[in-house]
Amino acid sequence: MKNTIFTQIPATLIPGDGIGPEVVEATVQILDALGSPFSWEVQQAGMAGVNSCGDPLPAATLASIRKNKLALKGPLTTPIGEGFRSSNVRLREEFQLYANVRPALTIVPGRYENIDLVLVRENIGGFYVAHEYYIPVGDDPRAVAVSTGVNTRDACKRIARFAFEYAVKNGRKKITVVHKANILKALTGIFLEAAREVAREYENQVQMNDMIVDACAMQLVLNPWQFDMLLCTNLFGDILSDQLAGLVGGLGMAPGANVGDDTAIFEAVHGSAPDIAGKGIANPISLMLASGLMLEHVGRHDLAQRLRTAITETLNKDHIRTGDLKGTASTRQFADSIVRRLETI
Image 1 (cartoon, rainbow, N blue to C red):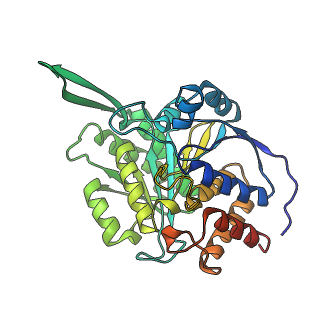
Image 2: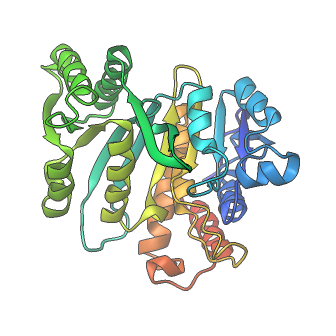
Image 3: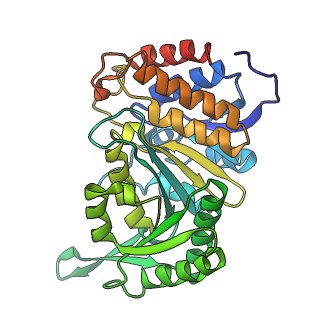
C-alpha cells in the first residue's frame, strides 16, 4: 500500500542509553517505511547526555521538547542508590506530563491469552517523585532515610478525568481504582475520594470499582480478564504496569505514553539493558508500539493500525522473533521483516 503524502510533524528523538540507539534506529526505519511522518530533532539525555555535555538532561534537549511538544525516547540509564536523579522523572515534572498510559495487549499467545488492559498512572505526584533526604545521627550521616509523598485533590481529579475521558473515547467500560487507603489513608485516600467524585460525572458511561493494591496484584495473576482499565497512583502504577507487561510477554512488548496538557513523550518502558547493548539482539517492539501511540496522538490512526498489523503478522505469520520471544532474529532482521510486511498492508 502506498503512503499518502502529508506534512511531516516536528518531533524530538532521544536515542537514549544502552540498547536505546539500536531500538530507536529500528523504530525510525519502520516509521520511514510508513512515509516518514515525523521530522526528527535528535537530542541526548541520561548517560548519553552526561557523556556529551555533562548533564543527564541537557538544556538543548529541554528546549527541543519545549518547542516541538512531542518526543520519542529510548530507555535512559538511572544510577541505582546514588548519582543523578532520574531523567525520566525530571522530564515528567518539567513538562507536567501528569498522565502515564500503559496498554497491555496480547500479540504473541503465551501463558495468558486475550489480555487487553490499559493502566493509567498519575505521573508526577505520590512517593515516586523521590523527594528524599537523610537525617544524620551521631557519626552516621545516613542514619535515617525519609521519603515524602504528596497528592493534591486537584491533581487526583485531573488524572481521574483523563482516565474516564480515555475510557469514553476508546470504548472502555470499567475503571478499577487501585489504592492503599486502608493504610495510607491520607495519601491514597484522597486519590480514591477524587476518583469517586469524578466517576459520578460518567456513571452512565463508565463503571468504576476500587481495589487495594495488594489484592489487585493477586487478582491480575489469578484472573486478569476481570479488569478493563486500572487507575493508579504513581508508585503503584509503576509496579503494576510491569506486572501487566508480564501478562503479555514482558517489557519488550509494552509501550508507554507520558501526556500533559500540551506536550507528550512516548517511550520504551524497559531499561537500557547495558549487558546486551551493541549485540544487535534487543527486541524493539516496545518502542515500535510506543511510536504507534505517538501516531495516534497526532491523528494518524491509519498508520498506527498498519504498524500494529505488521508487527502482529511478522510475529505470528512469518514467525520472525527476537531471542526474548524464543526466536533467532536480530534487531535489524526483525525490523527488515516488518518493513517487508508493511509493503503488503
